[in-house]
Length: 597
Image 1 (spheres, rainbow, N blue to C red):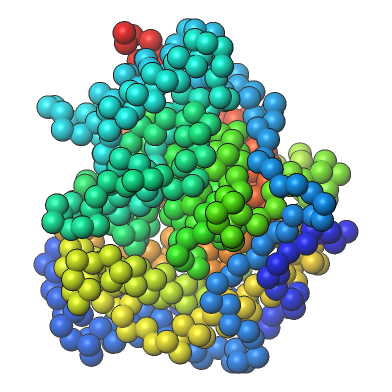
Image 2 (image 1 turned 90 degrees about the vertical axis):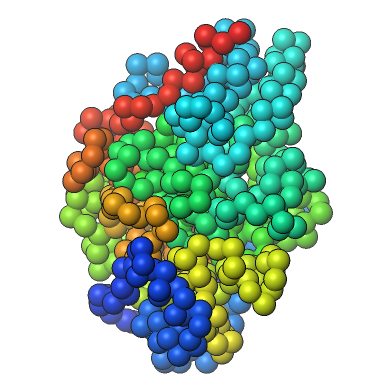
């Protein structure tokens, strides 16, 4: 049965051309140390070399796609679910099942918002105790350094303690604001939080007028704070969000506590690290090319990339703000609160609430086999077992699908993302004539190459986006409530190599491979969620490597994705081999807080 929901900007449902998915190895040189420094200087001083690098990265291949002139430009993939006639829009409800706590004897159990809420209500613990217990673990500037400080760029002790004190008083008076009241959360360092400076992963420059404390808090974070959540700090990120490994020479790379010999993923790297360590149950990230879902997958958590502009209208056609969480329930709680309609945001404020699926809804999984099977053998082994559980135990039907021009679409997305990044950097540079003066060598290289992108190629990218959106609309019409499943990342981890952090590094081949599946949701504006479904043994270091499975849905289908993530959590906890894995150095914040005064 076709969906009865109404949309603004919904693409026509038209099947795209039949194409073959046959990736060819990329030939981008891996650069670090002096080779990176020299390459960065060359592309900045020689337009010829920069153009050759741009062409070698295959950023110009989209213009060769035949028949693109027949498609409308989609320079912004805005598809808005509309509020039904006669319905008064309201906030999403935090329904009773989201208050349910997991069993105390569950293997690999992480603390959730519901755990904190119950402890606070019972008087066994207070938000102020939690804040006092957390701050010594995460605050920079201590001697010796705090054990978990790599995840946090800045903590404002006075702000954290003041908010925790007010929350403690509300519980004492029997008037908590809800399940998030007093719960610690972290926020990526590219979003404004009143009193905090947003560094975007850049080295702090006190003479830069853009490095100043925010005077107001961005809408999604303000909604979480209004629900009582306590921002305990700004989270470290990959500089400018320009890569997916999380390496940051200026701030230090956040630790992936599942196995510290591997990167946490980026660019919301601090969020992945903080969740894997158990420091917070919820972190808020941004995602322009997998930056929520990749660290969630690498670090064994849950991450939701919402529909474009669902939580906040960003100055981007690919980037969104969304939640990362240690449990599926907390992912849903954070999403429902932060997606409250903003009356001062004409685009975000017009979104109808996402609707949870009916128990009678037919469950359909779409798999493009040639694409899916590009993942490594160990990732395929884990994800295929999970899919068998969905079909055998939960009643999902698997249908084979195809999607055209995935190779060209990914290169187009990469060029688009870097071009947006260059524009943003120019807009925020002290000297717009030298916008790359304060960025690391990796970004000097990437953004200088992005400057070679012609305007006509951006138009062609927009036309290919239109083609892909029409084909997805065709699939969603053919199979209502379809979820397109892929591994989140084709590899289980990204090894840290000696010398990576000296200046950073650039490995375009690995970056492109790790973004193989996630870019499509960004380019088309669709929502997608990553959930851990198992683990593989690591080649180096101590600890297992999580494997994520990703579902992408129709525009506005966040609640359907959250319901699927909850089912995936049931598989991981109760049916997968060994259940959920908890890192050896996981911090039991509840027990630590109980020892504070």
